[in-house]
Length: 236
Ligand code: TMP
Ligand code: ASP
Image: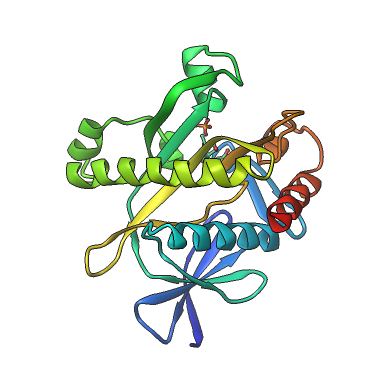
């Protein structure tokens, strides 16, 4: 497998073509952004940690029979994945109130939700990723209703797997965001990354934040928080 031209550069990753048309290389950068790119910094080694954690999580999902774009980890910063068309809908699952849920509905941060909540957002930086329901998604032609249902169902399955995985490592999965893609043959798969950039993860005892909120709200060293999380995940 040979890496070829750059296809797309996002805020945290670069996508490269390969000599195989159905496969791409994802390169994890150190760039860290928040609030739709308003706050931006380079955090040395972040890309390496996020590739390690994402790869570990995708391996686990694969074992549990959840379809993803992941093929294998290639190097410190590179992952091989199936090429997909990303659906411009971010699917968020929440187990506890935090972030925009707390701001929008006034439920205090850390309140346990009676059952996992699935929300959908339009992936659109200019509009600041507005919350959209299935009807919006269909009307705006972001995805069809069948796929919205499937994405929500898969997101809840991912939640069950990850909740237990993190709990066994003394970490609470507060919430997380998934992106989905379509392969050329029409399969719906979990895509992008699953890392502390896209999840809220708290120490089960101290409730210390081990995710990107540390950067968003200047709560300390992001590098230290991510390193601690990786260590716990590797120790199992
Ligand atoms: P929110 O509470 O800000 O809506 O975020 C919900 C989850 O989604 C949280 O785990 C962080 C993650 N997230 C992203 O991965 N990308 C984003 O652009 C945003 C706003 C949130
Ligand atoms: N991912 C978004 C950004 O890069 C927002 C966030 O994660 O807070 O700006």
